[in-house]
Image (cartoon, rainbow, N blue to C red; front, side, top):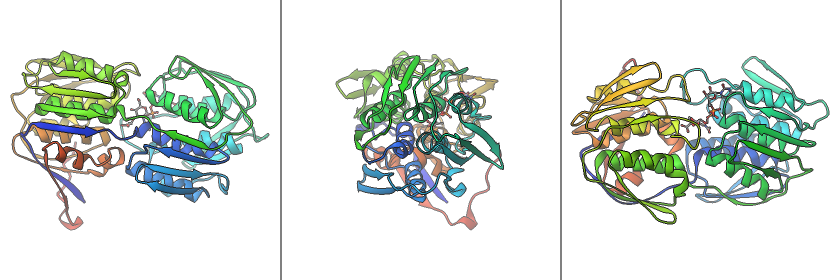
Length: 431
Ligand code: EPZ
């Protein structure tokens, strides 16, 4: 078991460079299955979810060649299976994208129900509704979703999303890229990674219009050819470092960001008394004054992202007054609160809302990460806290943050990574 030992109480200073967007990469890599040629993808984050997807594609017969740490060539001209192995797919949420990509290209796919972080019920009925509308027969049996089209080619359809869904929007976009005719997705998600996937597919020859708006139109094409594409910077990674500076104090230049994508996060931090100066692709974040309380509600983009909810809650737990954080996307995304309470935070959760009364300081404690963003939030808590924090279950963090420890150390954080033999693993506390 790996643990992070964090000695907190230090302000952060310096520069940090944001990596490629995880939630774009985990869609674009499966989307390479649609391409009858070589895709060269740049700015790929070096994270374990991406490594797992490379292994899955290789198992299906793809050739995956890393040109350097952030650039990969994927050649899906020799795919020999449409059934990725359960042992790999059940470990990652984004494995649902294999369904849309394989179904779109080969007219069949069989993929295990996706895994990923546990925020309560995470249905995929909207993905299935989209595939069915496009002519697929979709059945779920024995923990697998099997989708087939008798004619081997989906047809265009008008699909209304009953709820805004990032995954369903992207999956239907992939499936529709090679379908006969036009597919329209109404009430589509608008996250930056939706636009990035559309741009990737268009750069390979697809015809997708309207990504980033409520309505996306996909005119199916005969074939996608290879090409080169560069993934956008990670909005949530950037936001996580902004929240870290807000919590600890200090001044950090966040490099390789698209400032427009950060507006929903920046505006809340500014309300809390954080100074943010925007340049072309950088944000200078400075916090020296006491933090002010505020209210935050998570919503689909351009609202405040649910994937920043735990990190902002840590910052608010140090603000001077009472704040409210309302989760508007997931049913159960406050599991990390029990860990923060162990560090002295004063947070009361009632349904989907947390009332946070700021405390003068947090104190280090043994805690564990219960999912990716909760893990990142607890690192921030450890950095801001007085004393030593021992954070375990850090494999969650490594699923989605490239070299978080190295990047924070470069800003002056005191974090050690220690390997603890399994036999003396501390007992997990029940949350
Ligand atoms: C993506 O999950 C992200 N994951 C999540 O980020 C993120 O929290 C979420 O979008 C919202 O932004 C990836 O991109 C791999 P949804 P996804 O479909 O696509 C309901 C992270 O930390 N819904 O937009 O699975 C659902 O229950 C991860 O990086 C249905 O009802 O989320 C939820 O309430 C965690 N039926 C809402 O829609 C469906 O078929 C939004 O979910 C699909 C979703």
